[in-house]
Image (tube, rainbow, N blue to C red; front, side, top):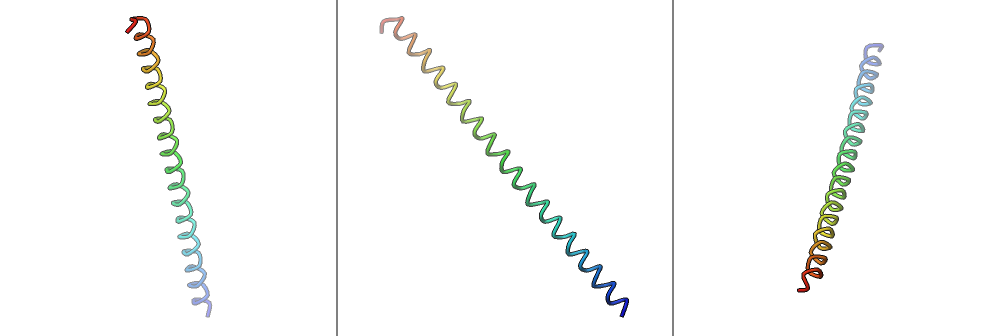
Length: 67
């Protein structure tokens, strides 16, 4: 009957909407993960730069002090 067909169509539409929502959630999660990775890389780079700078200054000081 027409009612049954309409109900089926509604169910299909709901399922499609749910699938779309799930896809959107997955995309958001992926974006968050990528952002976290980028932040981690930037942080590591910063630490390395600071350490190298400290190390260089320390070495220079030692050589100028002759000790």
